[in-house]
Length: 290
Image (cartoon, rainbow, N blue to C red):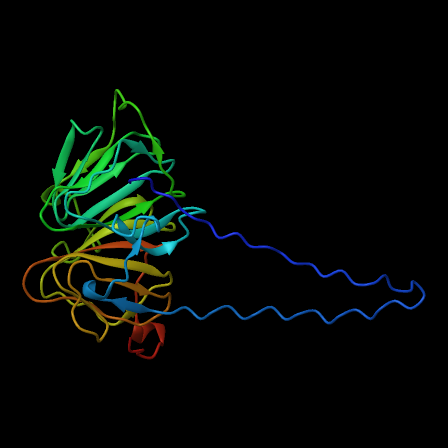
């Protein structure tokens, strides 16, 4: 994006030097400091209208904005939502990390060069390999919002010429293939795994719920971030979440996920461990309101 600059905060370590002590009268050792207790995992929910956007480049407050949902963009893989203003377009550039994105609203333009862009609408999935030249913009009259997962740190390098054999892919919403989460319930929830292996560890996926479906109260042994792509999702006791809303669900947090009656619901999930689901009654957990 236009002159994207990520700023890392520098930290100075101050060391106080005392006078040299008498070797025959050593100073007593200070008691070891107790390690702080880790913060308890929390679950939270943010409606689309309440998302706190921040400029991608602080020097360009009117430019693209984003919200980081998990991870550290300066250190490794992370999940975020981004918003591009209507009419915005990046110069030709590349990133050192691969990217997978899904359009939430607006009409996003993406391609190997300004002359080879595709216009992709809500629900469309696209992948961009690391170090491949591309441009991204917003061609709709409204702002464009998308959710994305980058498999390494965020950076941007301007590029002079397009790649001769680009390999980025675009899959329309209607062409995304979902596999039943439970093979015995083919009409139930479906999942399209975008990266990782949900049976072994961390993974990223799109999940589709039929309209009107509601899960029993349950827990997962891993934490996850969810972002609504389409439909109205209700996770817990709060109001239904519209597209562009996001929520965090901590490992072991009892919850219920529902798709409000009507259209199917699709949401983006990034889970930090293998997928499992244990009904609260079996887990022996007490209900915990969000």
